[in-house]
Amino acid sequence: MVYTCHWGLVGAGEISELFLQDLLTVPATRGVTDVAHKPVAVAARSLDRAKTFIASHVPDLKDSIKAYGSYAEIVADSTIDVIYIGTTQSTHYEVALLALRAGKNVLCEKPFTINSKQAEHLALVAKEKNVFLMEAVWTRFFPLTIEFEKLIHKDMVIGPIRRVFTDFSVCCPADPSFRLYNLEAGGGALLDLGLYALMWMFLTCYKHPENHRSNPDVVKAVSLKSPLNVDESTAITTLWSKPKILCVSTCSLMMDSPSECVVRVQGDKGDVIIPIHGSRPEKIIINLTGEESKTLNFPIPGQGLFWEADAVARDIRDGKKVDDHYPIQDSILSMQIMDEVRRQNDFKFPDALEFVEDY
Ligand SMILES: NC(=O)C1=CN([C@@H]2O[C@H](COP(=O)(O)OP(=O)(O)OC[C@H]3O[C@@H](n4cnc5c(N)ncnc54)[C@H](OP(=O)(O)O)[C@@H]3O)[C@@H](O)[C@H]2O)C=CC1
Ligand SMILES: O=C1OC[C@@H](O)[C@H](O)[C@H]1O
Image (cartoon, rainbow, N blue to C red; front, top):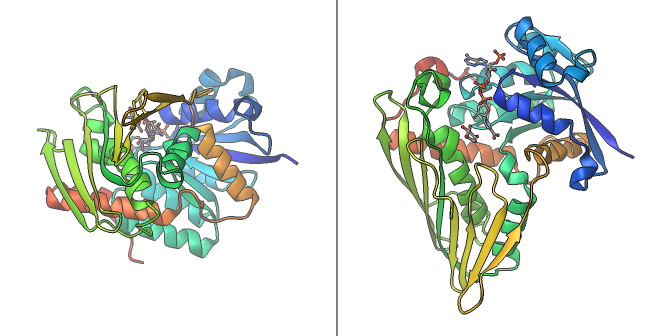
């Protein structure tokens, strides 16, 4: 039997539109037959904005998707199984608390929060309320990513891993009206883009079978600040002593990632490379010493946000409170590493953003 997951979308911005379009694609087009999705409602900070969002992006559904003019209203809607938070990161903590306290399951856009204390608090509230909580790091759920993990860890195609380079950079207009250059919106390269570079580090080093999900032994980082006070470029070196891997992860708002390679994993027998296509990689290249280069293709039939939505639907169907593939503990560690990078570089957000309730 097909399980249909009922979604409520919070925030009527860019990513909510892409997420909504992906919820509406037919699951069978990506080979999925066990779960389906139904968007039930969209909330914005004004009713007009929510209505305009629905009417302009999904005019055919304007009578079947509800519009709410406040986030408090949507989290009280009993027909919704899970709330998707697509607001700016400056608000994730506050909006997720609102939804969790209303007893709702939550999928919250990346970066999960501003700091790790907020992330820990959300995990605690989700546990108390016995609801599901996950950070929406969509790329983790791509078939490409799952194959990448299998190739390097299970199949060990390149033998023992020695060194890893990961990057995610996007050339952005240096303008505070753009959220990535705006400190008040939780901007900067690290939280928004560095998170992807750290994701590949997590998959390669943290999830290495010999690492047993231990923290890195060393985290050393340098950041270049913009006059607007956000980090424009950051480089993070991590050392993982159990599998004996050195990893360099970089991010920048000043230039795009080199298209030929955002991830390079070097092992004794060769390299595994992922070239980038925006934030939606579609190829894995395997270069083994003395052999012809091999390219594996993973076309994305849509935006690619539906794979994380499918995983959430299965988790909710099965009564899980944490996703096995991306447990909340990994989001907390990711935020802890970013806290440490910011501490080493004296990079603080305004107090109102760093705020954590006593818990
Ligand atoms: N997974 C992915 O590929 C991507 C993820 N993201 C993540 O999604 C989130 C939103 O990004 P994006 O959609 O590009 O951003 P937008 O600026 O397009 O939308 C952000 C939304 O946040 C809401 N919001 C609530 N409070 C505030 C506030 N105080 N200031 C500004 N906006 C507020 C607004 O909602 P309202 O409509 O209610 O007014 C607005 O629609 C970010 O955390 C980003 O990192 C972004 C791009 C890609
Ligand atoms: O998550 C993201 O991925 C793509 C980027 O362009 C965007 O700014 C970021 O939020």
